[in-house]
Image (tube, rainbow, N blue to C red; front, side, top):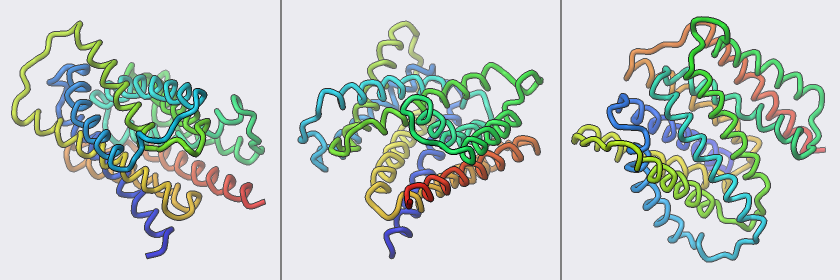
Length: 288
């Protein structure tokens, strides 16, 4: 198997794990308070990530102070992303919120240009503008389809964008699993503190199974995403992240009986097309 093929399969496996995790969380139906849910999932997920990081020696390398700053900022962004994304996920169709998240390559490219002064030509800026138009077709502001949860999904996009931008500022010597563990631990601690203000509810065997399974799948998603960085050409592998949308469409239809409207599908198609074009242009610029 070629490195590029291995990387593509790993990326698809990562997207499948993350999307199945989302479906499992959504299947809880809000029966468990959000902060309790994050604590229960976070305990198992953080423990598994810690064991994985320890086995890979991720805790041994020394980390520079500026890298700790970006790790901390990234972890705080992860806390915001977890809160807003899961809240929106519990109240929106799986495919809709997944489609909105596909705008991330565009927002990260735009953020890199705005905050880090990275060169972005008119072609990519045009693709970003068209991609945002596709996102507007999904959220449809000003219409009956736009809800508070649509706004939560957009805030989640901003949080994940901040997370990914801060990841770019980390030096290459920082182990990916150390970064992942720090984010998972930060989400767990924040959720645990927030859960002190709520009344915990008993968790049935069915709900416990869903939460435990979601922990396993999110760890699998993190693991495969780390392995992706070690296999093949990233510019070849990156487009396969959009397979997550296919998983969301299938699971949303099979598990929850949801199928996006024609406008949502059109918007998702525009976002994917412009995202692929942006990745292509970045790859072309790197070759020059």
